[in-house]
Figure 1 (cartoon, rainbow, N blue to C red):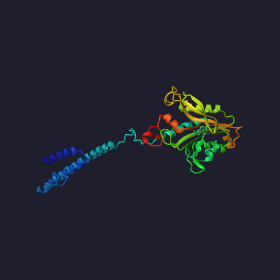
Figure 2 (figure 1 turned 135 degrees about the vertical axis):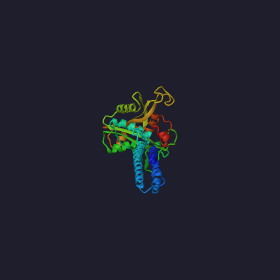
Figure 3 (figure 1 turned 60 degrees about the vertical axis):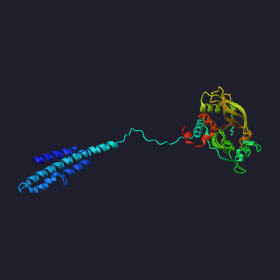
Figure 4 (figure 1 turned 180 degrees about the horizontal axis):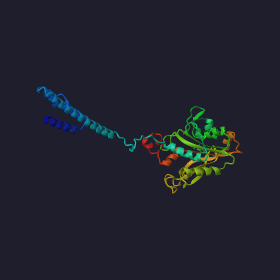
Length: 338
Ligand code: DAH
């Protein structure tokens, strides 16, 4: 009897000390398995007097049951504790910031093109994409650029064949628009343009321009100046000044170049603006009467103004980029900065 009570005490102590389900399994084998003390006691029953066997047998069975129940209780507790630990470890902290993927950004030329476009859209202009290839008629003749003009030379223009060229400016789109629409016309036309320039820090054979054209009754140089002044201030800043310098383009008369306050020195005079305080932003002028005639618009009834600007040059000034080649090299270290 005392032996059994002692065995129970030891067994319970063992069970209580189990740290894991795995350890509990091992303890179970130790306490109830073939080599266990209980089993030896069972085996030794045969050595007792026959009348004593059932009494002791029952006591040993009762002890076995108690141990099994205790094992089950502790097993349930350990299972619950281990499951809680698991849940704890698997808990997701939804307040942690997620892992973000870098999805890229707009190219600096696209940013500037969009800015320019949006200013004109806000002034009621329609956007019409320019062509990459045109006949020599649209690229030159219709724009009043005569056969003898040096720009038509093969050294300046990419000829696809005798008839077709890669456009040297977005201006041919003026002709396409005026041929298919009646005034009032108010459009801007972005596009790629091609010239056989040697590549250096400020020249590439392919670059981008934005053309503008307004044709209606009573359009004057006043409209041109007012429009482009507002445009420049919206693009660069309300504090800048604009200045119109006489120039020559075959498709406009009179023609001008518009300068804006130098972005480097703010008008004080520096190396960038060659001490003038101004830098050139675009070319412009009143649509030449011959150009209007070429598209069947009567110059005595209608007049218009046009302008054209280089996107790369504006983007370089805007972002302080000193080498045009960076736009096309697709170096992510450059592109990532915008
Ligand atoms: N086509 C000119 C160029 O490529 C830019 C230009 C100047 C366009 C005056 C115009 C304009 O429409 O009126 O340099």
